[in-house]
Image (cartoon, rainbow, N blue to C red):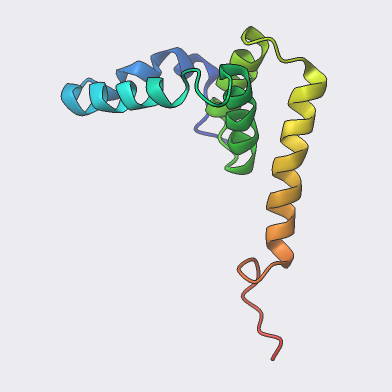
Length: 105
């Protein structure tokens, strides 16, 4: 099975701004601000990002936030719980009003 995902590409992420450096700088400044310590800790934000990465099924984000969670002091049990929250919400979406195109009335 072919996939566009290549783990070797992850370190090249910052190159996405090479053709639009001003926009890239604004994006990375925003990104940095979002993940900085605030009402939530950086560790908590990394756990949220890991859960969202699983929900949107982005292998690059899963790799990146798995590493970030570990660097911020999360343990595998916390990371697993965060991913299960995403799975529960994503799975619940199937049975919710927007998760199905079927009309029952």
